[in-house]
Amino acid sequence: MNKAAYHLILALFAASVMVSCVGHKHDHDHDHDHDTEMLPSTGSFGEAITKDGAVAVTEIASLITEDTPVEVKVYGTIVEVCQSTGCWLTMDLGNGETIQVNMKDHEFFVPMDAAGKMVWVEGVALRELISAELLKHYAEDAGRPQEYIDSITEDAWQYTIEAKGVIIEEAPSI
Image 1 (cartoon, one colour):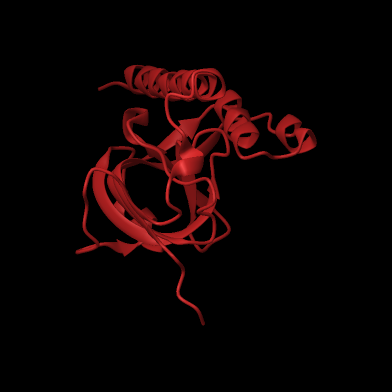
Image 2 (tube, rainbow, N blue to C red):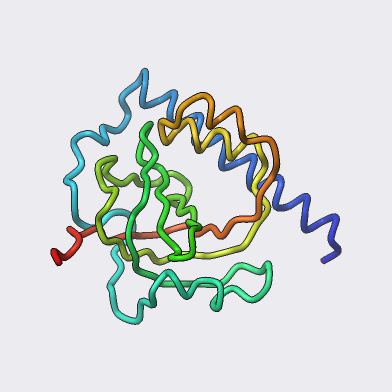
């Protein structure tokens, strides 16, 4: 596949994620098709997965060696959750960066109070260029201040996972 076709596919994917998230936000605000406030704060969401064979999310860069999708099962700490519907979360990569985890096709959601909890994620990972517009959308969903949202002016490379299932548990006490 040539570079232009690859970038077109990535742009279409990013646009579809943004449109579907915006669409679900609208549904949540007006139609109440799903009530994420009623979700338990821990448990399994999406397809049933196990923790078996999961690797630390901090190793994600070594799992993704090209800009080609790869099946992964990782675990780590949740940093943020979409505060509109619970349609995405971010995980700490341990190097000052995060990985964006989107719930596959918005078929399921995670509790909006899951930040700080442990999570196991199974899905398809990719390193992709995320548009400034989509990054602003994520910042809005996270409840970031307008000043922060306005400061996003450039596209950025980011690790992402399209999750088919997740397990969320309380973080162990130290």
